[in-house]
Length: 251
Image 1 (cartoon, rainbow, N blue to C red):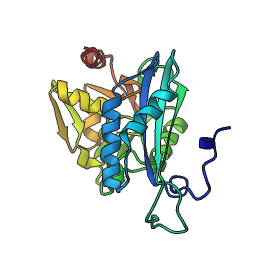
Image 2: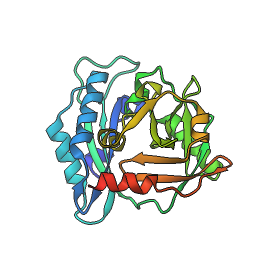
Image 3: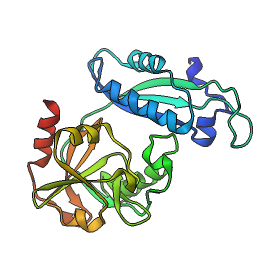
Image 4: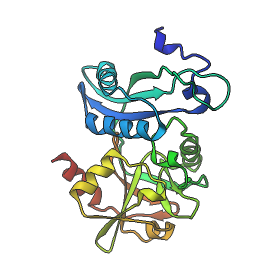
């Protein structure tokens, strides 16, 4: 057992979810898009008023990666120890650590349900990868109970936001769409890469937009682009969208 395995009982990340994390894909010792992940953590720290040591974060992530195999690398930053209550201590020592776990690429398309758990578009945390991820946990649990792989999360206005652990894209009338960040969406790394390479319309849309779509895909750093074969009771036919987007990202 190492010191990092002994998280103090007064750690603000443990008690209050005060902190951030990044999940990255590593294949044979190489972390994909590490700079982009560190950029996002740095931006999140700025929003939360936390210091960020980029060099230490990069070293921690690289050190955690095994030399061979496919791994999910999690970089975690907590606000450190604090006293009772919500206020952070004036001088805090943040905790930064990284872990790696084997990660198998998804096999086949995903089945989705619509979660009853809502995304709070009015909260700054909805657009940050904070340690407070309970809403996503609950939505993913709904998917499992419903025999699905993932859950679509709507925001409080009834607009499509995201999946529990992925961004959403859909094709309708030859046009590609994704929810706006203002809908309570995390700015995913794969999402950003697609926006930079493909013509995508960022919209605020209700569930009917997904229900009418010709194709729906999920994206995140571990799965890349995954097609959706079922949304609730609706079966979506096979479509080349996921393959086309995956090929674009591979270039």
